[in-house]
Image 1 (cartoon, helix red, strand yellow):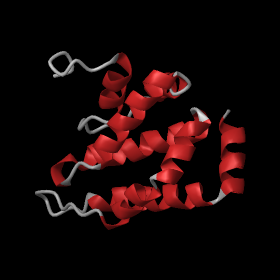
Image 2 (image 1 turned 90 degrees about the vertical axis):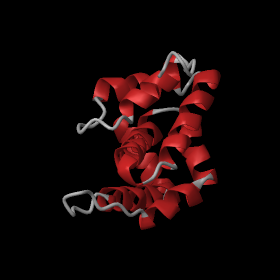
Image 3 (image 1 turned 30 degrees about the vertical axis):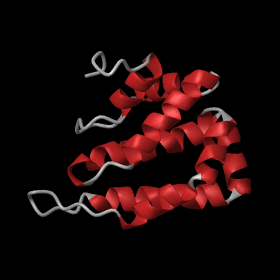
Image 4 (image 1 turned 180 degrees about the vertical axis):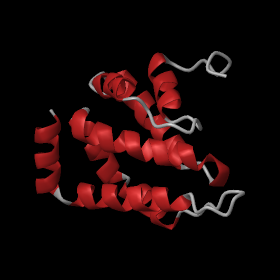
Length: 138
Protein backbone atom coordinates (compact mmCIF):
# COMPACT_ATOMS: atom_id res chain seq x y z
CA UNK A 1 0.00 0.00 0.00
CA UNK A 2 2.86 2.37 0.84
CA UNK A 3 4.51 1.78 -2.56
CA UNK A 4 1.26 1.90 -4.56
CA UNK A 5 0.38 5.26 -3.02
CA UNK A 6 3.94 6.52 -3.43
CA UNK A 7 4.19 7.63 0.21
CA UNK A 8 7.31 9.45 1.37
CA UNK A 9 9.58 8.14 4.13
CA UNK A 10 7.93 10.52 6.62
CA UNK A 11 4.40 9.43 5.63
CA UNK A 12 5.33 5.75 5.88
CA UNK A 13 6.69 6.32 9.40
CA UNK A 14 3.46 8.09 10.47
CA UNK A 15 1.35 5.31 8.93
CA UNK A 16 3.42 2.73 10.84
CA UNK A 17 3.14 4.68 14.12
CA UNK A 18 -0.64 5.02 13.70
CA UNK A 19 -1.43 1.52 12.40
CA UNK A 20 -4.32 -0.69 13.49
CA UNK A 21 -1.91 -3.04 15.31
CA UNK A 22 -2.99 -3.67 18.92
CA UNK A 23 0.22 -2.14 20.35
CA UNK A 24 1.26 1.49 20.56
CA UNK A 25 3.89 3.25 18.46
CA UNK A 26 7.48 2.63 19.59
CA UNK A 27 9.30 5.51 21.24
CA UNK A 28 12.17 5.14 18.76
CA UNK A 29 9.76 5.54 15.82
CA UNK A 30 8.10 8.56 17.46
CA UNK A 31 11.55 10.08 18.05
CA UNK A 32 12.43 9.61 14.36
CA UNK A 33 9.18 11.33 13.38
CA UNK A 34 9.78 14.15 15.89
CA UNK A 35 13.22 14.75 14.34
CA UNK A 36 11.66 14.87 10.87
CA UNK A 37 9.29 17.69 11.96
CA UNK A 38 12.26 20.07 11.75
CA UNK A 39 12.42 19.44 7.98
CA UNK A 40 9.93 21.74 6.21
CA UNK A 41 8.84 19.20 3.58
CA UNK A 42 8.65 16.27 6.00
CA UNK A 43 6.75 18.45 8.50
CA UNK A 44 3.97 19.05 5.95
CA UNK A 45 3.80 15.37 5.04
CA UNK A 46 3.72 14.28 8.69
CA UNK A 47 1.00 16.72 9.71
CA UNK A 48 -1.09 15.98 6.62
CA UNK A 49 -1.01 12.24 7.38
CA UNK A 50 -1.83 12.86 11.07
CA UNK A 51 -4.88 15.00 10.18
CA UNK A 52 -5.98 12.27 7.77
CA UNK A 53 -5.67 9.65 10.53
CA UNK A 54 -7.59 11.84 13.00
CA UNK A 55 -10.52 11.82 10.56
CA UNK A 56 -10.83 8.04 10.55
CA UNK A 57 -13.98 6.50 11.98
CA UNK A 58 -15.23 3.64 14.09
CA UNK A 59 -13.40 0.42 13.38
CA UNK A 60 -10.19 2.40 12.72
CA UNK A 61 -10.30 3.92 16.21
CA UNK A 62 -6.66 2.86 16.72
CA UNK A 63 -5.60 5.16 13.85
CA UNK A 64 -7.25 8.05 15.68
CA UNK A 65 -5.97 7.14 19.15
CA UNK A 66 -2.40 6.56 17.95
CA UNK A 67 -2.47 9.78 15.91
CA UNK A 68 -3.39 11.62 19.14
CA UNK A 69 -0.62 9.77 21.01
CA UNK A 70 1.87 10.71 18.29
CA UNK A 71 0.66 14.34 18.28
CA UNK A 72 1.10 14.53 22.05
CA UNK A 73 4.69 13.33 21.63
CA UNK A 74 5.41 15.66 18.70
CA UNK A 75 3.95 18.68 20.51
CA UNK A 76 6.39 18.07 23.35
CA UNK A 77 9.49 16.95 21.43
CA UNK A 78 9.12 18.00 17.79
CA UNK A 79 9.27 21.36 16.05
CA UNK A 80 7.29 24.15 17.72
CA UNK A 81 5.31 24.35 14.48
CA UNK A 82 3.52 21.13 15.50
CA UNK A 83 1.90 22.82 18.51
CA UNK A 84 1.27 25.94 16.45
CA UNK A 85 -0.58 23.99 13.75
CA UNK A 86 -2.53 22.04 16.39
CA UNK A 87 -3.64 25.30 18.00
CA UNK A 88 -4.78 26.59 14.60
CA UNK A 89 -6.77 23.37 14.05
CA UNK A 90 -7.79 22.76 17.67
CA UNK A 91 -11.42 22.26 16.63
CA UNK A 92 -10.39 19.04 14.82
CA UNK A 93 -9.00 17.69 18.09
CA UNK A 94 -11.90 19.06 20.16
CA UNK A 95 -14.51 17.25 18.05
CA UNK A 96 -12.89 13.95 19.05
CA UNK A 97 -14.20 14.38 22.60
CA UNK A 98 -17.45 13.00 21.11
CA UNK A 99 -15.77 10.05 19.33
CA UNK A 100 -17.84 6.87 19.57
CA UNK A 101 -16.95 3.28 18.87
CA UNK A 102 -18.19 0.14 20.58
CA UNK A 103 -16.38 -3.01 19.41
CA UNK A 104 -17.95 -6.42 18.69
CA UNK A 105 -17.54 -7.43 22.33
CA UNK A 106 -19.48 -4.36 23.49
CA UNK A 107 -16.34 -2.61 24.78
CA UNK A 108 -16.27 1.18 24.47
CA UNK A 109 -13.05 1.78 22.52
CA UNK A 110 -14.00 5.41 21.92
CA UNK A 111 -13.27 6.37 25.53
CA UNK A 112 -9.50 6.28 24.90
CA UNK A 113 -9.88 8.73 22.01
CA UNK A 114 -12.24 10.98 24.00
CA UNK A 115 -9.87 11.15 26.99
CA UNK A 116 -6.73 11.67 24.90
CA UNK A 117 -8.36 14.49 22.91
CA UNK A 118 -9.44 16.25 26.13
CA UNK A 119 -5.88 16.00 27.51
CA UNK A 120 -4.40 17.40 24.29
CA UNK A 121 -6.87 20.29 24.07
CA UNK A 122 -6.14 21.16 27.70
CA UNK A 123 -2.38 21.15 26.99
CA UNK A 124 -2.73 23.25 23.82
CA UNK A 125 -4.81 25.88 25.63
CA UNK A 126 -2.26 26.26 28.45
CA UNK A 127 0.85 28.00 27.09
CA UNK A 128 2.73 27.84 30.40
CA UNK A 129 2.15 24.11 30.82
CA UNK A 130 3.08 23.58 27.17
CA UNK A 131 6.35 25.44 27.69
CA UNK A 132 7.10 23.43 30.86
CA UNK A 133 6.29 20.06 29.25
CA UNK A 134 8.46 20.87 26.21
CA UNK A 135 11.34 21.90 28.48
CA UNK A 136 11.03 18.65 30.47
CA UNK A 137 10.79 16.50 27.34
CA UNK A 138 13.75 18.04 25.51
